[in-house]
Amino acid sequence: MCDGQGRPVRLHLTAGQVSDFRDADVLLADLPDETEEVIGDRGYDSNRIRLSLAERNITPLYSSKEEPEIKAALQLASV
Image (cartoon, rainbow, N blue to C red; front, top):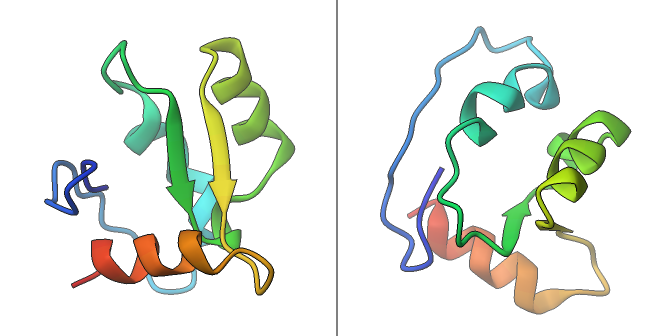
């Protein structure tokens, strides 16, 4: 997980064949109170994650072909 400047702030390693959203709770558990948006790839898109974020008034943003600005942010964060 990276902050708004693309700097890594949290890391959680899993086996290569584990679905991304399965352990997302570990990464999302201690988000700062001021967090308004979380950007992720479609591997993190699940109803469980969306509901968890909605309970904290956090907007999930997932990349798609129609949203190049989110894709650009993901590329920056993975540098």
